[in-house]
Length: 278
Image (cartoon, rainbow, N blue to C red; front, side):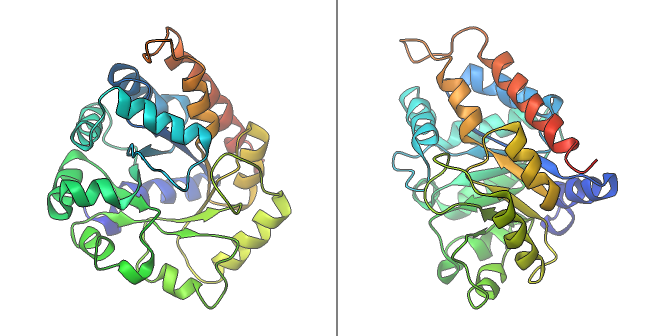
């Protein structure tokens, strides 16, 4: 399956045909432990997630807020590795070949794994795209261009400070969708005003035909609905991983009920997103 007509493109085309926005649900691979993580991942599509953003645990996730940072550290403490993250995707694909999965994270773990090896293994596992927050367009030759050649989408972040002069550079090698960071700063710390999101999405639409997904600072079903009214997707991460954190025992392993609690919240978010334009 090529990136130009892959799962992401098919999913956003289907959402457009339905006349609604999608829900992009973020969880961290291996959080809080391998078994619970696999169950949560498997349940996300049924709960209403249209796209899954799967975090690759890293010891220094500088763009992430406290909740996502903690999820990364929990996963690493319980033995999560890049190899296990790709195996998690591979296992998911055995039951679901339609839901897009985008890996989100930082370049260091990919560099250590080996770029060529990572891209080949990610593609074979069933990964659809990458969001690498610490590789600007000036370093496209490092990973972005090889990823696209390997058939993976490379999703770029645009922020409130990405002006009209900078946008063409940011969008040049972007595919799949554009991820609009609705707030300045780290994830999950505060929320953006609906009016500012609407203005930003309109501006981005003047520069690209790619779908626009809005994230950072979207925590509640109401906020997800506000984003879904103007964007092509709402991204929720910190509010989901916080539920995982609330169900971790003293041993660092998941307590009973974590999967049900996460999927219940995703279902509430999905319901709000689906009803946003009615």
